[in-house]
Image (cartoon, rainbow, N blue to C red; front, side, top):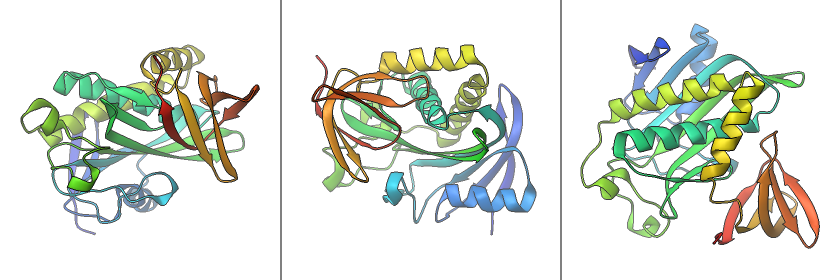
Length: 256
């Protein structure tokens, strides 16, 4: 296990940064490093992933030039793990706005879109003790400088293509970690959770759209009307209100 040990500067101080040339998955490596070193907050960053993954074990295209990292955060006191995904999406939207001056949409529960194309994906994994979450690993993949493969150009976009020049990966990493730490810490208060939900809803293009939710047991098509205090998506389908805690979302028809 070869890595460079650094300190990542954030507005909350310095935190450990494990920098790898190539790993199978930063999420998986974050768990390995916890078992070995027991730090409570740190970042794992890889220049390339061989088996990057998203929800439902889908492959995340992870060539050199993208930003792939996982933030490990222990001692989190929050009851609903879905809120960590929403807080992380909001944080990454803010980081991308600051570094590239672009406005992105949030697609519930874990995608960031630029003009309907995927720019960033988030995988949030939580460990619980009883009913309370006490540890989260936030995996982030951003299409930054690497060209999008031809077969994905209709659904994905990179920062370089949007702004016309390359972006410093370490600068974006530092800014992203800073925003993530701030937003995740907000989850520990009721007021912070309310502010995150309000902000998330303002930028969530899923709300007001006709959507199909792919679930393990089938699918539901209806209008996405709200997000609950627990982070679940409320969908009105055939007169019945469904609260969806997790699922794959397809925007059938956007709001407006």
